[in-house]
Length: 313
Ligand code: ERO
Image (tube, rainbow, N blue to C red; front, side, top):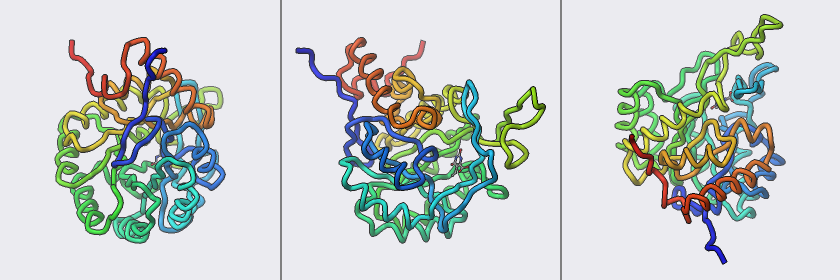
């Protein structure tokens, strides 16, 4: 009998039976969507980023899928943090950790939300989103290193649960180092790399127009387009951050091989966004099976046997 191949992992001290789960954003905004993830093969449930109040988000069309990936300018539609905090009561029935994404529109909003949810024992951890590209007039906090530090100083005075951050993609070597030196000054549990590449533009050449309505067509790019950028960010933060920080890979994961590459670069878990939006919850089982087959064929019994072991040539 061949020995089992394990794709289990640990994030923020919680065990996940599968290292694959949803990215915050697609199909995780209401109770039905969160329930569907809860009863699927996903290793965890992660909520849509929550603000203080419920939001309708930007005008439609605001999400378009193309052959190579997606563009979105959702504008943070969500049900408000109280809904996602209350959902933790239901989430405890799924036998997997429930993480709540928080994306307040100001530092004070973030602080308020984090204070309020600290009493909810079934929220396993908070993914603080430093990287929403789509709220008109609001810069991405993660591109301002001083503001990021300031925000983390504030939230770490209040937070009770393990806290991680969702980062925007960086493209310049000094920027990786600057963000890593901020993060290494705090007891961060995990870092999710990356959010969508902000403010891309997809053009419809037949209509000679943009494809989404908000912000004159500018929006966050996800899917195949962004895998090399996502892998670079996973690799850099895996290299630069304290080893106590788990890296969660996100970006361009469609197959088991994509997940394998993220783990090889150092990811302890892998989130699926654009492909989850296309395929629904079935993607978690399919990608898990593909990843397991790859590991079996390479002789790796578990993630730790190859995680982070990317070789130079
Ligand atoms: O527009 C959004 O709601 C949104 N889209 C993204 O690609 N990333 C986000 O982080 C985000 C909102 C927080």
